[in-house]
Length: 284
Figure (cartoon, rainbow, N blue to C red):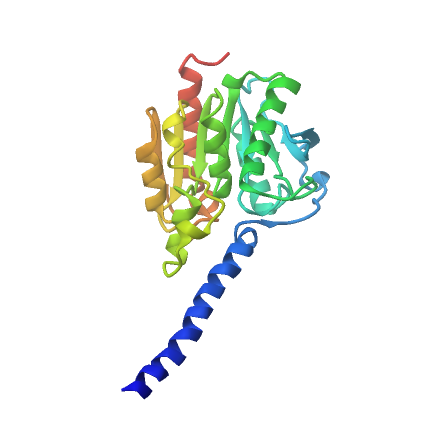
Protein backbone atom coordinates (compact mmCIF):
# COMPACT_ATOMS: atom_id res chain seq x y z
CA UNK A 1 0.00 0.00 0.00
CA UNK A 2 2.82 2.42 0.92
CA UNK A 3 4.54 1.66 -2.36
CA UNK A 4 1.32 2.37 -4.26
CA UNK A 5 0.93 5.72 -2.47
CA UNK A 6 4.51 6.71 -3.28
CA UNK A 7 3.93 5.85 -6.93
CA UNK A 8 0.73 7.95 -6.96
CA UNK A 9 2.59 10.90 -5.43
CA UNK A 10 5.42 10.60 -7.97
CA UNK A 11 2.84 10.67 -10.76
CA UNK A 12 0.71 13.45 -9.30
CA UNK A 13 3.41 15.99 -8.48
CA UNK A 14 4.63 16.42 -12.10
CA UNK A 15 1.03 16.83 -13.26
CA UNK A 16 0.40 19.52 -10.65
CA UNK A 17 3.66 21.29 -11.52
CA UNK A 18 2.79 21.15 -15.22
CA UNK A 19 -0.74 22.46 -14.60
CA UNK A 20 0.44 25.46 -12.62
CA UNK A 21 3.23 25.98 -15.11
CA UNK A 22 0.64 26.27 -17.87
CA UNK A 23 -1.32 28.76 -15.77
CA UNK A 24 1.80 30.87 -15.15
CA UNK A 25 2.82 30.71 -18.81
CA UNK A 26 -0.65 31.79 -19.95
CA UNK A 27 -0.67 34.64 -17.42
CA UNK A 28 2.66 35.96 -18.70
CA UNK A 29 1.82 35.41 -22.38
CA UNK A 30 -1.80 36.58 -22.28
CA UNK A 31 -1.33 39.43 -24.75
CA UNK A 32 0.04 37.01 -27.36
CA UNK A 33 -3.28 35.13 -27.19
CA UNK A 34 -5.33 38.31 -27.57
CA UNK A 35 -3.55 40.51 -30.09
CA UNK A 36 -2.12 39.62 -33.49
CA UNK A 37 -1.03 42.96 -34.97
CA UNK A 38 0.49 43.32 -38.41
CA UNK A 39 3.08 46.06 -38.70
CA UNK A 40 3.17 48.52 -41.58
CA UNK A 41 0.42 49.23 -44.10
CA UNK A 42 -0.29 48.47 -47.73
CA UNK A 43 -0.41 51.57 -49.87
CA UNK A 44 -3.83 53.20 -49.76
CA UNK A 45 -3.50 53.89 -53.49
CA UNK A 46 -3.57 50.14 -54.12
CA UNK A 47 -7.29 50.03 -53.40
CA UNK A 48 -8.52 52.91 -55.61
CA UNK A 49 -11.03 54.30 -53.09
CA UNK A 50 -9.64 57.82 -52.61
CA UNK A 51 -8.46 56.80 -49.14
CA UNK A 52 -7.09 59.58 -46.94
CA UNK A 53 -4.52 58.64 -44.30
CA UNK A 54 -5.00 60.53 -41.03
CA UNK A 55 -3.13 60.77 -37.74
CA UNK A 56 -4.30 61.81 -34.29
CA UNK A 57 -3.31 61.29 -30.66
CA UNK A 58 -4.95 59.60 -27.71
CA UNK A 59 -5.37 61.19 -24.29
CA UNK A 60 -2.22 59.37 -23.12
CA UNK A 61 -0.17 60.69 -26.01
CA UNK A 62 -0.10 57.71 -28.39
CA UNK A 63 -0.14 58.52 -32.12
CA UNK A 64 -2.72 56.51 -34.06
CA UNK A 65 -3.09 56.13 -37.81
CA UNK A 66 -6.38 55.66 -39.61
CA UNK A 67 -7.93 55.66 -43.05
CA UNK A 68 -10.87 57.74 -44.15
CA UNK A 69 -12.77 56.08 -46.98
CA UNK A 70 -15.25 58.55 -48.51
CA UNK A 71 -18.77 57.59 -49.48
CA UNK A 72 -19.58 56.97 -53.13
CA UNK A 73 -22.49 59.37 -52.62
CA UNK A 74 -20.86 62.39 -50.95
CA UNK A 75 -23.70 64.76 -51.76
CA UNK A 76 -26.33 62.65 -50.00
CA UNK A 77 -24.25 60.92 -47.32
CA UNK A 78 -25.65 61.54 -43.84
CA UNK A 79 -23.59 59.20 -41.69
CA UNK A 80 -20.03 58.38 -40.80
CA UNK A 81 -19.14 54.86 -39.72
CA UNK A 82 -16.34 54.53 -37.17
CA UNK A 83 -14.85 51.09 -37.87
CA UNK A 84 -13.00 49.02 -35.24
CA UNK A 85 -11.42 45.87 -36.69
CA UNK A 86 -10.67 42.54 -35.02
CA UNK A 87 -7.59 41.42 -33.11
CA UNK A 88 -5.57 40.43 -36.20
CA UNK A 89 -4.00 42.28 -39.13
CA UNK A 90 -4.44 46.03 -39.55
CA UNK A 91 -6.64 48.49 -41.43
CA UNK A 92 -5.07 47.50 -44.76
CA UNK A 93 -5.92 43.78 -44.41
CA UNK A 94 -7.93 42.76 -47.45
CA UNK A 95 -10.91 41.40 -45.54
CA UNK A 96 -11.38 44.73 -43.79
CA UNK A 97 -10.82 46.70 -47.00
CA UNK A 98 -13.55 44.66 -48.69
CA UNK A 99 -15.92 45.81 -45.98
CA UNK A 100 -14.93 49.47 -46.43
CA UNK A 101 -15.75 49.08 -50.12
CA UNK A 102 -19.19 47.68 -49.41
CA UNK A 103 -19.94 50.21 -46.68
CA UNK A 104 -18.98 53.19 -48.84
CA UNK A 105 -21.28 51.75 -51.52
CA UNK A 106 -24.11 52.10 -48.97
CA UNK A 107 -23.44 55.83 -48.77
CA UNK A 108 -21.33 55.77 -45.60
CA UNK A 109 -18.14 57.68 -44.97
CA UNK A 110 -15.80 55.34 -43.11
CA UNK A 111 -13.04 56.05 -40.60
CA UNK A 112 -11.10 52.86 -39.85
CA UNK A 113 -8.35 53.07 -37.25
CA UNK A 114 -5.46 50.91 -36.18
CA UNK A 115 -5.18 50.35 -32.46
CA UNK A 116 -1.91 51.09 -30.72
CA UNK A 117 0.72 48.60 -31.87
CA UNK A 118 -1.10 47.83 -35.13
CA UNK A 119 -0.14 49.05 -38.60
CA UNK A 120 1.66 52.38 -38.25
CA UNK A 121 0.13 53.28 -34.88
CA UNK A 122 2.52 53.69 -31.97
CA UNK A 123 2.55 51.84 -28.67
CA UNK A 124 1.50 48.35 -27.60
CA UNK A 125 -2.06 47.02 -27.34
CA UNK A 126 -3.84 46.61 -24.01
CA UNK A 127 -7.48 46.60 -22.94
CA UNK A 128 -7.45 50.09 -21.47
CA UNK A 129 -5.30 51.31 -24.34
CA UNK A 130 -7.81 50.11 -26.93
CA UNK A 131 -10.60 51.90 -25.07
CA UNK A 132 -8.55 55.12 -25.20
CA UNK A 133 -7.93 54.52 -28.92
CA UNK A 134 -11.66 54.21 -29.58
CA UNK A 135 -12.43 57.40 -27.70
CA UNK A 136 -9.68 59.29 -29.52
CA UNK A 137 -11.04 58.23 -32.91
CA UNK A 138 -14.54 59.41 -31.98
CA UNK A 139 -13.22 62.74 -30.74
CA UNK A 140 -11.15 63.14 -33.89
CA UNK A 141 -14.32 62.95 -35.98
CA UNK A 142 -16.21 65.33 -33.70
CA UNK A 143 -13.55 67.94 -32.98
CA UNK A 144 -11.25 67.84 -36.00
CA UNK A 145 -13.64 66.80 -38.78
CA UNK A 146 -16.59 68.66 -37.19
CA UNK A 147 -18.98 65.71 -37.51
CA UNK A 148 -22.04 65.75 -35.27
CA UNK A 149 -22.01 62.77 -32.85
CA UNK A 150 -25.56 62.07 -34.02
CA UNK A 151 -24.17 61.30 -37.47
CA UNK A 152 -21.59 58.77 -36.24
CA UNK A 153 -22.37 55.05 -36.30
CA UNK A 154 -19.96 52.99 -34.20
CA UNK A 155 -19.07 49.64 -35.78
CA UNK A 156 -17.03 46.85 -34.21
CA UNK A 157 -16.03 43.41 -35.45
CA UNK A 158 -14.96 40.64 -33.02
CA UNK A 159 -12.52 42.26 -30.55
CA UNK A 160 -13.46 45.58 -32.14
CA UNK A 161 -17.03 44.96 -30.98
CA UNK A 162 -15.81 45.19 -27.37
CA UNK A 163 -14.13 48.51 -28.19
CA UNK A 164 -17.28 49.73 -29.95
CA UNK A 165 -19.58 48.76 -27.08
CA UNK A 166 -17.34 50.41 -24.50
CA UNK A 167 -17.26 53.62 -26.55
CA UNK A 168 -21.01 53.57 -27.22
CA UNK A 169 -21.65 53.24 -23.48
CA UNK A 170 -19.79 56.51 -22.89
CA UNK A 171 -20.76 58.77 -25.80
CA UNK A 172 -23.87 59.96 -27.58
CA UNK A 173 -23.77 58.59 -31.13
CA UNK A 174 -26.26 57.75 -33.89
CA UNK A 175 -26.10 53.98 -33.50
CA UNK A 176 -24.06 50.89 -32.76
CA UNK A 177 -23.37 47.91 -35.06
CA UNK A 178 -21.44 44.87 -33.85
CA UNK A 179 -20.43 41.78 -35.80
CA UNK A 180 -19.35 38.51 -34.18
CA UNK A 181 -19.41 40.11 -30.73
CA UNK A 182 -18.64 38.30 -27.48
CA UNK A 183 -19.97 38.80 -23.95
CA UNK A 184 -16.53 39.00 -22.36
CA UNK A 185 -12.99 37.81 -23.02
CA UNK A 186 -13.32 35.63 -19.91
CA UNK A 187 -16.31 33.81 -21.42
CA UNK A 188 -14.35 33.17 -24.62
CA UNK A 189 -11.42 31.91 -22.58
CA UNK A 190 -13.64 29.55 -20.62
CA UNK A 191 -15.06 28.22 -23.88
CA UNK A 192 -11.62 27.46 -25.28
CA UNK A 193 -9.80 26.38 -22.11
CA UNK A 194 -12.41 24.85 -19.80
CA UNK A 195 -9.71 23.09 -17.76
CA UNK A 196 -8.06 26.36 -16.68
CA UNK A 197 -9.23 28.89 -14.00
CA UNK A 198 -9.65 31.58 -16.65
CA UNK A 199 -11.63 33.95 -14.44
CA UNK A 200 -8.69 34.19 -12.03
CA UNK A 201 -6.01 34.17 -14.71
CA UNK A 202 -7.12 36.78 -17.20
CA UNK A 203 -6.07 40.37 -16.72
CA UNK A 204 -7.94 41.62 -19.81
CA UNK A 205 -11.68 41.30 -19.32
CA UNK A 206 -13.37 43.14 -22.22
CA UNK A 207 -16.66 42.71 -20.35
CA UNK A 208 -19.11 43.92 -22.99
CA UNK A 209 -22.15 42.28 -21.43
CA UNK A 210 -21.94 44.46 -18.32
CA UNK A 211 -21.63 47.56 -20.53
CA UNK A 212 -24.61 46.94 -22.81
CA UNK A 213 -27.17 48.39 -20.40
CA UNK A 214 -25.40 51.76 -20.65
CA UNK A 215 -25.64 51.90 -24.46
CA UNK A 216 -28.50 54.26 -25.30
CA UNK A 217 -28.10 54.19 -29.09
CA UNK A 218 -30.09 51.85 -31.35
CA UNK A 219 -28.08 48.65 -31.77
CA UNK A 220 -27.71 46.12 -34.58
CA UNK A 221 -26.17 42.73 -33.81
CA UNK A 222 -24.85 40.67 -36.75
CA UNK A 223 -23.72 37.12 -36.01
CA UNK A 224 -23.02 34.10 -38.19
CA UNK A 225 -24.94 30.98 -37.18
CA UNK A 226 -21.83 28.85 -37.74
CA UNK A 227 -19.37 31.21 -36.08
CA UNK A 228 -16.53 28.91 -35.08
CA UNK A 229 -14.66 31.53 -33.01
CA UNK A 230 -17.39 33.33 -31.08
CA UNK A 231 -20.46 31.12 -30.53
CA UNK A 232 -23.68 32.81 -31.56
CA UNK A 233 -25.00 32.27 -28.03
CA UNK A 234 -22.62 35.00 -26.87
CA UNK A 235 -24.14 37.38 -29.41
CA UNK A 236 -27.65 36.52 -28.25
CA UNK A 237 -26.70 37.17 -24.63
CA UNK A 238 -25.38 40.60 -25.58
CA UNK A 239 -28.58 41.28 -27.47
CA UNK A 240 -30.64 40.29 -24.43
CA UNK A 241 -28.62 42.71 -22.30
CA UNK A 242 -29.13 45.61 -24.74
CA UNK A 243 -31.78 48.31 -24.48
CA UNK A 244 -34.41 48.95 -27.13
CA UNK A 245 -34.39 49.70 -29.98
CA UNK A 246 -32.26 46.71 -30.92
CA UNK A 247 -32.08 44.22 -33.79
CA UNK A 248 -30.46 40.78 -34.04
CA UNK A 249 -29.66 39.31 -37.46
CA UNK A 250 -28.39 35.77 -37.99
CA UNK A 251 -26.33 35.28 -41.13
CA UNK A 252 -24.79 32.35 -42.93
CA UNK A 253 -21.03 31.85 -42.95
CA UNK A 254 -18.47 31.82 -40.15
CA UNK A 255 -16.66 34.33 -37.99
CA UNK A 256 -14.60 35.72 -40.86
CA UNK A 257 -17.01 35.17 -43.74
CA UNK A 258 -20.47 36.43 -42.80
CA UNK A 259 -20.12 39.55 -44.96
CA UNK A 260 -19.15 37.48 -48.01
CA UNK A 261 -21.10 34.24 -47.50
CA UNK A 262 -24.34 36.12 -46.82
CA UNK A 263 -23.59 39.56 -48.21
CA UNK A 264 -27.15 40.41 -49.27
CA UNK A 265 -28.53 39.79 -45.79
CA UNK A 266 -25.49 41.26 -44.05
CA UNK A 267 -25.44 44.57 -45.90
CA UNK A 268 -29.19 44.62 -46.41
CA UNK A 269 -29.58 44.61 -42.61
CA UNK A 270 -27.15 47.50 -42.32
CA UNK A 271 -29.06 49.39 -45.01
CA UNK A 272 -32.33 48.87 -43.14
CA UNK A 273 -30.68 49.98 -39.90
CA UNK A 274 -29.35 53.17 -41.52
CA UNK A 275 -32.80 53.88 -42.90
CA UNK A 276 -34.28 53.52 -39.41
CA UNK A 277 -31.70 55.93 -38.02
CA UNK A 278 -32.34 58.46 -40.78
CA UNK A 279 -36.09 58.35 -40.16
CA UNK A 280 -35.77 58.63 -36.38
CA UNK A 281 -35.46 62.40 -36.47
CA UNK A 282 -32.39 62.37 -34.21
CA UNK A 283 -29.88 63.48 -36.83
CA UNK A 284 -28.27 66.84 -36.25
